[in-house]
Image (tube, rainbow, N blue to C red; front, side, top):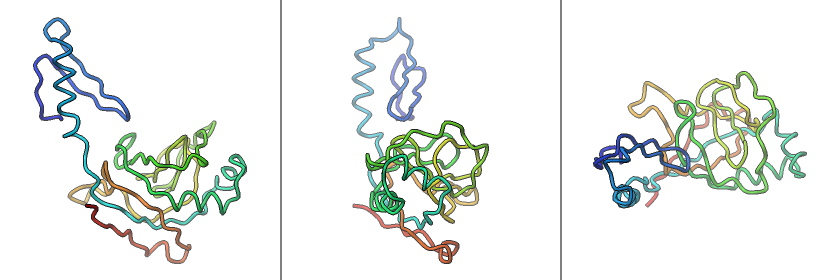
Length: 190
């Protein structure tokens, strides 16, 4: 959609579930702008392209708290999280940060009351109705469920962000000994 030119539209700013459209209100017919954007939207949504299987170790500091708060056992939290398939809705917040949708409703939990000043890159996190993996070490108010050794953001790569909007993600429980050498597996989707 960024290559599209609609007379009177000055800027398009996509967000997680919305699109901010800056227009010259006295110079455009708003219905024309709405119709032109509606015609472009189906073209701007990326198709489902790949399914990533990411090895993770469910040993996060907040895992017992999450289980207790949700009235579940730790094993049930892990099972629910690891058997779901997630969709990369968008990238944002930080380079390579993929917002993953598809979290089972039983795992919906408010973010932490106080963010941590920094958590490690590769941290598997949970907050609200989403889950994610931290691509870089940075602050976070999300709950720590575990970790992966897979680099989600790498400036040495042609495409630095491993996960892209439209990709699918499945988390594969892995033991601590195998985590460091476990590689992500990627399959093409039709």
